[in-house]
Image (cartoon, rainbow, N blue to C red; front, top):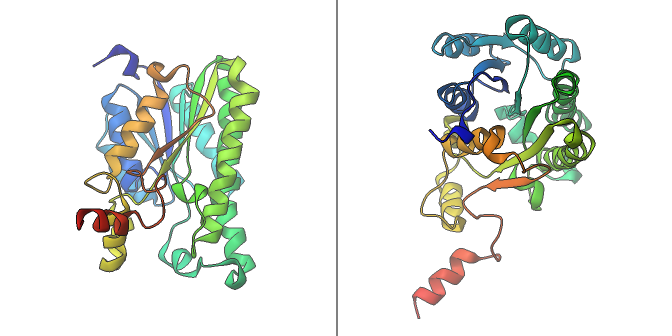
Length: 268
């Protein structure tokens, strides 16, 4: 392994760590040498994953609860005495939320507040706790998972995309305020990623549309996100901070109707 990519001796918290992207990230960070805290709302799944990793810790946490977030960081310090990496990967994406998150005209206040409570406020609280620890150490890396929807208008997921756009600005703010203290903060912006949760209820026609509008020959999978997080957490990325790394196969960078244009050109 390139020593610049090594995470040996470092301690990482991964929120949403028991999910598709989260579990892939936990495994990769462990392979690179980090000790990982698997933080997830599903305590049983988090415990099962931690038991399968060397020197890992599982903590059940609801990111809508400030007290539970503070408990997460307290348990991390009790177990390892430091924190080098925070991967804010968790988001409110339950089926009930996704089905109700449409346009602003039909948005309930309750859904908007629930989404921001986890995706934005929860991320802020995790960052705040991490920064207090990292400031004393004089080093640390925070990676906030946003979404390519934070860059695009859409007919649905108005609350989700707005909450993730706020995370982008939070990332820049932390990079600006704490860079001189040895702390870097970046955002990873996934597109549709091939997790079981993302694909389970996706209508075949919708998946076809996404595949057609993706510039790469494939839709990304959890390891694509995990590799990006591990890189940003490493010394190989020591001069990268305040940045948005979009990992969506190019779906957010092309002209509208890319797939139709491609068909027209191919057809002569």
